[in-house]
Amino acid sequence: MISIGEVIETNSMIEKENLDVRTITLGISLLDSISDDLEKTCRNIYQKITKTAENLIKIGEEIETEYAIPIINKRISVTPIAIVASPSARSIDDYVKIAKTLDDAAKAVGVNFLGGFSALPAKGTTRSEKLLMESLPYALSESDNVCASINLASTKTGINMDAVALMGKIIKETAYQTRDKESIGCAKLVVFANAPDDNPFMAGAFHGVTEADSVINVGVSGPGVIKKALESARDADFRTLCEVIKKTAFKITRVGQLVAREASEKLGIPFGIVDLSLAPTPAIGDSIAEIVEEMGLEKVGAPGTTCAIALLNDNVKKGGIMASSSVGGLSGAFIPVSEDHGMIDAVEKGALSIEKLEAMTSVCSVGLDMIAIPGDTSAETISGIIADEMAIGVVNQKTTAARLIPAYGKKEGESVEFGGLLGSAPVMSVSKYSSSAFINRGGRIPAPIHSFKN
Image (tube, rainbow, N blue to C red):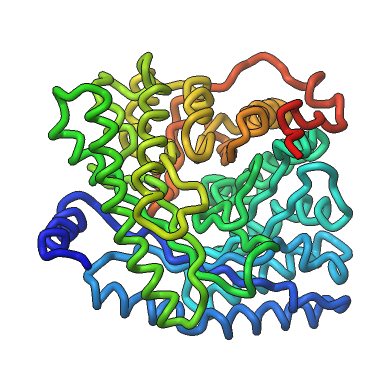
């Protein structure tokens, strides 16, 4: 039972501290949409999505009204399209057609993003996966709501360096193809190591092949709530600080569990997971950087920042795991630059570099997220940054990712403006030294020794 005190406390968190349910994401399997005929595949995909998700927006709004809990986004994730399209898609144009079908379905049911235009070439690349990757610049420029992800590495298989090299070129081309919109295509494209099957957050969401036919996953976010709680512990030691974060994360996750349970029951679709990821927004007071600074650092990026993120991430997970029957996805602290006004300020003041962000990714929930870099950055340098991020994930047996935006025509010190939740990003400097000879070796880096645990 939830006490009246908890109700009052939750209302305060919503009204004053930016607590929200960031997303209800409906995962939909498209395995039964597979056909060897492209037209039939597209028709099956459209019908499956629009039928399964026809009440998603309506039910989400009902829950918002009933419980007075803001649900910011209603989204869909689907089976990785490289699997679904394999028998029928023979060309880049075929994959672009499927992306447009997904976009039409997303618009028909009213969701703002649909994830799953994805491939999983962690060990090797199939014909279908290569075609999907090569289609990305055109698929993302000719659709509005489709998001894409590529899993390039895993602790069990190592790093597919051929795919890493290819994705550097693909990201450059995607930036060019969406140059008239601040290279926004790259903001809808993420590369992973150890991608989870049940991630509700875009752009990396897809419906894993281990999942049921459909499932409800909920992502909760509350950086402002954590910051507010820490204000009462300014003179406390670290043990007390950890306890405050755990208790607050527990309360936040209970809100997500409630929404997930209600959505599951009303839609008649199984509940999957609650992802407690502290995902910031451009709103003042909704910042991961501000949490770090509340712990006692003058500016995010100062010595001690990586330790502070590790402390935050671990205790968010510890608190959340006790509040839900199934915590999953990414769950932890996101550190996207463009979506966090505190991170933007730190970059502009010279306190935060891409190298420090990379160090922080070794202990946060994801990785280098929404990082704008100069438009003339070479494909090999982009691949080198990706390779570093993949190595962190593989060696540390954790999910890592990179969402890099080589902003076409932009230089260090300028900025890109996306609007909405994507915010704006200062263009950050990258190393001027070349990675090309390393990246162009090709092949696969085998799994690390600690992957052998059978």
